[in-house]
Image (cartoon, rainbow, N blue to C red; front, side, top):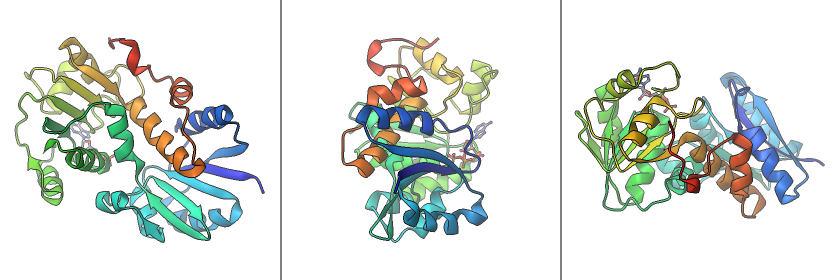
Length: 272
Ligand code: ATR
């Protein structure tokens, strides 16, 4: 039977994972096929349960299914359970195993030790939860700010980190909001929208938003001297971890980066 893997989402047409994974599988000489699986929420559980019997080794899971993925799995890693969401499912011996590689992918993309450093997470959705959890586990002093303060307070309470009502300058800032997704947004408007108006740039800035590169917030951070890590690097790293889980082999990160058009973090290019 053909070995299959894929990405499940709704919509999933825009996903860069198929290009990234096809390049990686080619580089590893693995004759698998990686496909897009658009599944509306009402079909998710039944359709995914059937994949294991149809030659699928595993699937990546994206919006809006990450919570449902954890719920339907027969077992889950402690990371996936702590975050309350799974982005990777593995079909093994008739059972479904859930993992969350968003957290590990973020830490790998960050490529520095955040232990003891002040880290500000902007946003309070699912991405913020994975990032804040990963930073807390890595020993950072985590604060969460969000436009809707009650959501930040709830998330900070659940993770036992600080709720930030008014951001101040900080060593590490991570944008998990969708601000900057619109390439036409003015830098100043983007800064004000995420509570950073009038603040100095951090030492390291991570923007989970990708698409138009650099984003307005990345331009601001780079101009202020920050080391900037883009969302594509985080995408590559979470995909690399999923592939390693399924194949038991090291993922060809450079090939995956090239396939999604992510800049090489070592090449010293400053966005903007
Ligand atoms: P995900 O699960 O993908 O992280 P989400 O739950 O839709 O996404 O959350 C999106 C985040 O972007 C939220 O923190 C949201 O803030 P609110 O909780 O106040 O809605 C934030 N966000 C979206 N648009 C924003 C804007 N224009 N200004 C500031 N924050 C914004």
